[in-house]
Image (cartoon, rainbow, N blue to C red; front, side):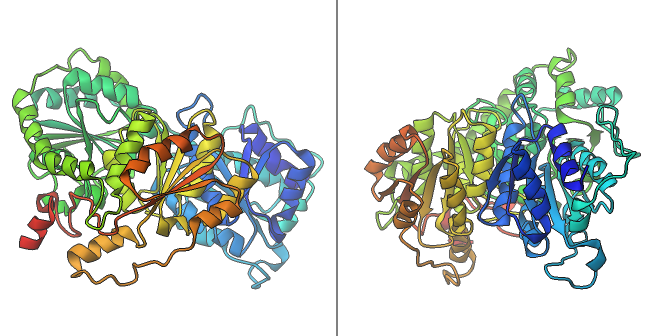
Length: 579
């Protein structure tokens, strides 16, 4: 068999059905073989970065289905592979299993600065769990099987297989044999799925029972381990409130009585104040990143910390733990949710305190949403998101780009469906949403998918409207157009004396662009049009775009200033101006 045939055989044996990518000289043999076999559904992105985010969307959305998949993207050598870098780096930061297969120049000219040559393995090594270059056809099949195993095992992440063009065309020797049914990767120390230590669980139960003001912190690991149901059972059993990282949202219903909402820089008042006043943090599948903790010297100083985390390198990295449990979050929660030693406590004083925190900004926020427009009569994103929640009843899938609208969605969309929230967290990559929504929809075709972008991020991967058009992918596109890079403008308003350097944008006619791709478009400028426009988009069979003209001066609060701790949380502009 040729190397190209072995590439596709390895993908097929691993249940891969979709491939995202963009062809070119060094990867043409694989594409040619794919065309001959006609086994895979190929989605041609209009830029390689788009292919990486499509693969991410498929991986993440399929996690909670009966048939989880790893997203696969392909690109040629040199600029093709380099255009994957941002999407691969993003996948590493957000623990998303992705396989990138890249073509490389022939082995005879590697390291000669050949046409479209880049050191793909060297570039990708710090951005992946592992990068590979098979140097014989006989190595290809095993390499891809190992790469996919590495991508999925433990904490997920991206892997890259860079295949020289001559190795793709190479025939295997006569005695080549690879038995996929008996294959086990030879990775000493890596093949593990950590089981919880029962003695440590007993210690955790003692700490939980002793606590008067505990808080659960729900991270992305709850989503990745499909632990939402067990988290809810544990929280209800112990009567402990739950705060969420950005990627922990949608683990349990957002309106659950124990839900505090998102924690961190733009977290809710009640979530952040609860973190400040708790005596125990029980943290599941999260890494205590700076957007959650703020200044580490001010974080959790009066609380014990139980950290349940599958990746041992994250334990005690940022926050010192009182008790560390290196294990899969769902396996831990299965024990805790049924442990008869775990007590149910009323915690009346603690919940009364949390109710006070919740009331702090509630009236002002509701008044702002009720008003619906800013000083100049332009729409507030909070108003649009609230109405979107009402139209969808919180059941639909939301794919967000990065910026103000992302934080507003995280705060105000009423998530009801497990694993229904997708965006870029750790890397904060603008332009991720449109291509990511393609993979999400392909993974869960029977669910309605809304992709929501600001006018800045939308134009970073606007070309993927071509892929959506070509494959008739049914995605509802909401464009929040305020003529600025909104989140940067907010920082400029609050910390740079209102100097809007590099943030105003002169935008094109988005309706004309949508029309060029055959996508119906509505422009909404008044509050009374919002619900009708959303209902039209929801009912339409096929892609539909709704553009909202939004107030550029809208601010999303609370906000923890850079370098500050949660104690420095700003809850009103008056507080900021009087500081």
